[in-house]
Image 1: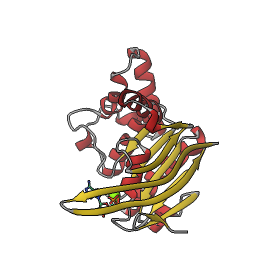
Image 2: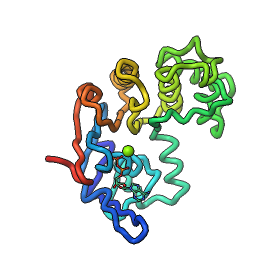
Image 3: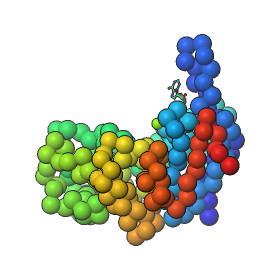
Image 4: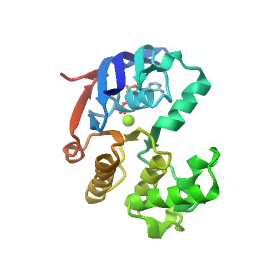
Length: 223
Ligand SMILES: Nc1ncnc2c1ncn2[C@@H]1O[C@H](COP(=O)(O)OP(=O)(O)O)[C@@H](O)[C@H]1O
Ligand SMILES: [Mg+2]
């Protein structure tokens, strides 16, 4: 079944008076269990596409369906709910909160929900275990390496048990070996828990770990 269905997706931005065609008619279906790379040079539209699939930005034209729901039919509250329930994000620069421990960073997305403290703790420790960091729960981001920080970010994305995790150049700030290890962690979660990962990259070695590669160029999919 298609979990994500994107049709004729178009996104335009105005930069001053110049109209930028960031995406020019993208058609894409993403199914259960996929580990998908969005590849393409800088400026090709990778971030724009991920932000639209993640419902943190809206298209100029075209449609996005998540689990058969057309997101343009949803109110902003419903959209926020869908995002919180089904989508996790991982960013290039990790985006951890520096004054919080690894445990607290991972716990953060659960605080807005009515989940009891014991269950929260279990879920956070489970997520940290999934990324091999259960013994680093008390460490703050500045006491962790880059690869460990990105693994905390993966645990934070994972803790709400989303169906889809979107990762925008998750290895771009890591050295090669560390980046590959982080990708392996993502791949393991994909295989064991069936979480769909959609990640952008321009690193050929990272691309080679995907089970499908969608190549973007100037806002279009290269056939
Ligand atoms: N907020 C914005 N305002 C204006 N132009 C933007 C904005 N975001 C992206 N763009 C432009 O859209 C195009 C695609 O950008 P982006 O999706 O960031 O590509 P990538 O992630 O592949 O580098 C680029 O030309 C970029 O300059
Ligand atoms: Mg980008």
